[in-house]
Image (cartoon, rainbow, N blue to C red; front, top):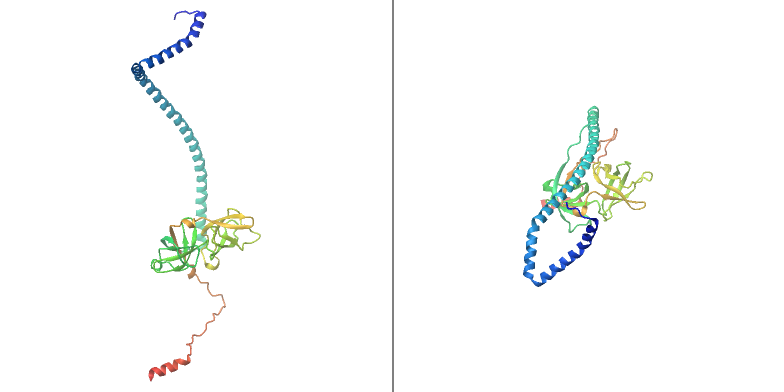
Length: 304
């Protein structure tokens, strides 16, 4: 390396900027004087620098992929730790569920529990209801030929949708739980209090006749009650919601305005008859034919 004094370095540093300015002005003047020469020179420079730009772009892409890989690895590590924690929790709940299932089986065996029969069901397509006496009802493409009867329970994927009120050979009308004519006995799952769910043609039916000392809780699950043998116990309906203070409604699990398929279950509730009470003598009226005064005349007329 050639030794250079400080004064020379300072002089060269002061000359760099003017020299570059003069060089730039000279290139501009040469380009204006001879366009073809300028274009040719520019293309030579571009061709010479093209591999360098390609290398820089490739390196930048590799660096970006490397940074993204590091971020993904960090995210995967966090997700793995989260999944391991959830897996440990699920494992504990699995052990609890297995223990409860074993205990339940033992109790059923000791109590000689009789299992309920599996209900029969029919799946049908839902079409729009353009007639009838109900404002919130749908037609189901399944009738008596498919085993559908009046009083059957209509369930969607998430919960209760309604009940069959009219049936024909190939179609049935299902009264939805939001119709103003719908009245269902329900049970609040947390407090086990009973109430009546009444439709009012709005998307959320009202809760009525619940105990004053056991008011519905916001977000509490609502299921069917087996009172009056209208519905089986425990069918999911929705959750409690308060639109206004003191006015609880039920937010259904099912989107009743977007029904496409329904399953109609026959739980056999109408076939359940209570036995006679001990000492109770059923009162039966003797079946007597009606004595019509014109029957004799009709018979005489035929004989004559």
